[in-house]
Image (cartoon, rainbow, N blue to C red; front, side, top):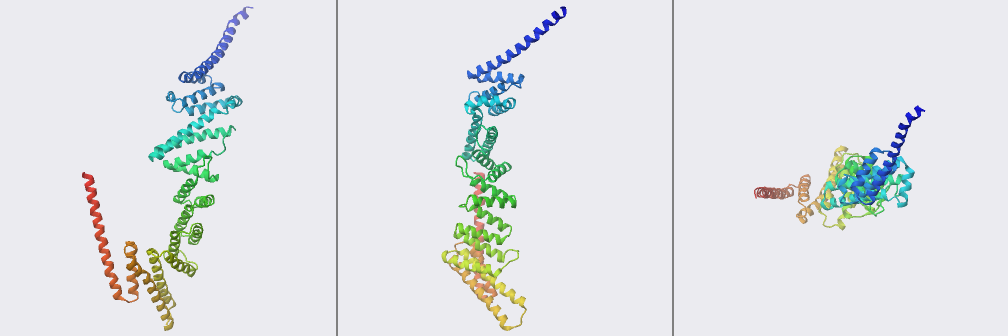
Length: 446
């Protein structure tokens, strides 16, 4: 009997303490809820921070904390209470869901999951504000801030999708702005991540009707600059299919193939471009690359006569529709000059003593040189003011052709003209240089 009396007081004390703790916990939750409902967010925050610190396994407490911090993020007067109240709310929501998934879902469902969507929309709107500021000021710092906001919005978006609360597996609007912000802020690694994600998913348009062509352009340009041939070819081919009207992807593929000296595929690429857009500037670029393949490149030339025919026919047709094209005249002049060189080389290689054969080669060389001079003289006589570089090159080649023809009088005539042009260019260069020095000196000491 004495033993029972001895244990009775401690038992009663323990029961009383447990009752007090339960009552105190309930009281703290009720107090925090009351502050929250009264929109006294400062005291609600303080109360809930203390509560979850002691009761870290209480799902209801963590969910209430998420709602309080969400409210703080939307109230400009108390936003200072947390560095990133939306992220605090998001982490609290995740903790509550981890502790009691069914409870959290049951609490959020009647409001159509308003809490996570509040966080998502909040980050998205902040990102757009920074993005627009970056566009207005051309400011990388604003774009960088925008990227951080969009990345956080992406985290919330994925969480919403993974819990089957809404949205889609790939939030196209978010990923578009994330990619653009990363590109404009100069963060290439992150830009590559988002751009590849867009391309690999085959996305061309977002829910907000933002066309993704500019993202694909950046992606293929980046791969080209990094000399990543595999990804460059992959994404350029993909972009051509996704954006059939855009010539950018044809042009960058042409540029890549030219750098690789893959001339056969280069010409195929030109044919695709000209079929899409038969612009004269692309036609001339094609002919210029055919010329480079024949006479400038170091690669082995296959079927030379075929490409010589394409070049000659193409340039003559081009000049019919572009009568004032001095650059095309220079190119066909150079073509005939090279044909003359080929005739001379072939004559040397044949090592024949047959007078008739030798005379045939010499006549061919002479005719090619004379044909070359027809176009070069047109540049000198008709287009002297069109382009100084082309004009000077035409003069130099004309002199060389006349020397090969052993017409020294004509060669000297054009040599004098070249000397005059060179002198004038020298004088103009020095005048420009002196003006530049004067302007720089005046600006520095004004």
